[in-house]
Amino acid sequence: MSDNPLLERMKKEGHDRLLIGGEWREASDGAEIDVLDPSTGEPVASVPSASRDDVIAAVDAAEAASEAWASTPPRQRGEILRRAFEMMIERSDELASLIVLEMGKTFAESKAEIAYAAEFYRWFSEEAVRNDGSITLAPAGDKRIIAIGQPIGISVLITPWNFPAAMATRKIGPALAAGCTVILKPASDTPLTALAIAALMEEAGVPAGVVNVVPSRRSSEVVPAMLDDPRVRKLSFTGSTEVGRTLLEQASKRIISTSMELGGNAPFLVFEDADIDAAVDGAMVAKMRNGGQSCIAANRFLVHEAVADSFAEKFAARMRAVKVGPGMDPGVDLGPLINESAQEDMAESVELATGAGGDVLAGGKAPDRPGFFFEPTVLAGVPADAEVLGREIFGPVAPIVTFGSEEEAVAMANDTIHGLAAYLYTGDLSRGLRVAEALESGMVGINRGLISDPAAPFGGVKQSGIGREGGHEGMKEFLEIKYIAASW
Ligand code: NAD
Image 1: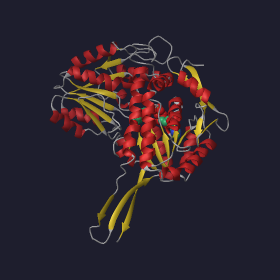
Image 2: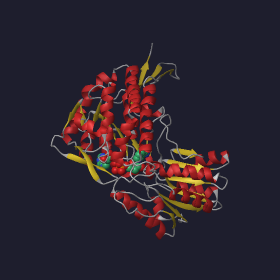
Image 3: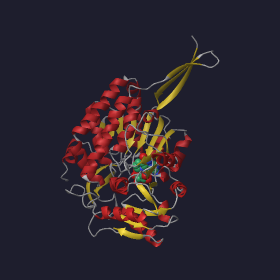
Image 4: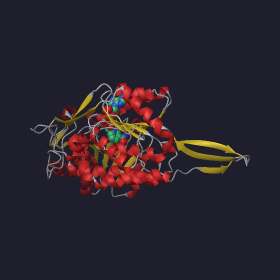
C-alpha cells in the first residue's frame, strides 16, 4: 500500500497493468518490474514487464485500430486530444503526486510538468486539422504536382524517466493528430505516469488499440522485436545518445523512419556585458529545473573572466539556499536523483572537476540521509580541457569555466559531440543573435533559462538527435509525404 490515492485507484481498477488493444493485462510470462520511490529507495508498486509476445500483441492491436483511426475525421481526433488536455489539467494534482512518487521531483515541478505535458495535447488538438498539402503547376507546365501528408502508420514510442508525462504526450499527441496508432514503451523506472495518462485517454474517448502501453525491463529484446515487425513504420525515441545509436542501427535493417531526441551538453554563456543577477536567475532555472536531470540542462557554465567571480559567488549563494528533501515535503526545492547510480555519477563529476583543479563553492557531496539525494554544487575555476565538461552531468552539479573573448566562448561551446540546447546572457542583442547563429545547437535561449514550449520546434543537431518535436514540425514526423502527378 502507498498513500497515493491515484496509485491505489489504478491498482483497484487494474490500470497498473499493460494496456494492449483496450485490455489491461498481465505480462504473458507473469514478469514484473518493481517501481521504487527514489526519496526512500523503497518499492511502491509493481507493473508487468512486457515480453516479446506482449509487444507483438500490441503491434496486432495497433494494426487492428489503424485504419479506423486514420480515417477518423481530423476534427474528431483533435477533440479527443482536447478532452485529454482538459482532463489532465483538472486532475493535475493527482497526476503530479504520481510523478513525485516514482520520479522524485518536487510537487511544484511535477505540477509544472503536467501543465507542460497537457499543453502538447492542446497544441496537437489544434494541429490535427492543419495537415496542409500543396498543389503546384510543374515548371514544364505538363502536370499538377500534388503533395499530401498521410499518417506514417504504426509508431513505436520510447520515452525516458526524467519527464515521464511530457515525453509521452510530446509523442502521443502528434502521432494521434496525424492519424497514427502507437505503442508506448515508457522507461522502466517510471511506468506509472504513462499508464495513468493512457487510462485518462481511454476516458477521453481514444478507441481501443490506438494507444498501447508496454512497460518492459527487457528493452533490448522487445524493442528489436517491434522494429523487426514489417507493420511498424516509425520509431520515435527520447533518451541517451548511446541507446539512440543502437536503435538507429536496428531501425536501419527495415529502413524505419526515426525521430531521435538524444542527450545534450548545453553551454551557458555569460558575457561581460550581461546583467549578472538575471544570468544567475537564468542559471538556477537552466541548471536546476528537474534537479538538473534534463536533456537541456545547462551543463557547462562558460563565463567571461571579467565577471566570473561575481557570477560564481552569486550563483553559489543561490545554490546553497536550495532546500533539499523529499518532493512532497513543503518548502522543498530539490528532490532526489532517480537512482543510486545517478548519485554516484554526481560524486564522480565533482571528483573529476576538483581533480582537474576546480574549487567547490557550494555543495559537493551526497547529504547524510536515505534516498538518492545530492547537494546543489557549484565548481569554479574548472579548466577548459577538464574531462567533466565532456559528460552529460544530469544532476545538480555546475562547473564554471572562464573565457576571454567571444570567439573563444563560441569555440568552447561548440567543442562537444552534442548540440541540443545552449543559453547565453548579454546586454547586446546583436551579439546575442550573432552568437546564437554561431552555436551548433538546435535551440538557443537568449537572456532566458527556460526554452521549452509545445509550440516551438524542440530538437538537436550533431549527436543530440534527428527531427523535431512540438511546433508545426512535430506532427510532420508522423506523416509521410505522397506526391501525386496529375493531369486534367
Ligand atoms: P536511456 O537511453 O537509458 O533510456 C531511454 C529509453 O530507452 C527507456 O525507455 C529505456 O528503457 C529504453 N532503452 C534502454 N536501453 C534500450 C535498448 N537497448 N533498446 C531499446 N530501448 C532501450 O535514457 P534515460 O536514462 O531514460 O534518460 C536520460 C537520457 O535521455 C539523457 O541522455 C537525456 O539527455 C535524454 N533525454 C533527451 C531528451 C530530448 O528531448 N533530447 C529529453 C529527455 C531526455
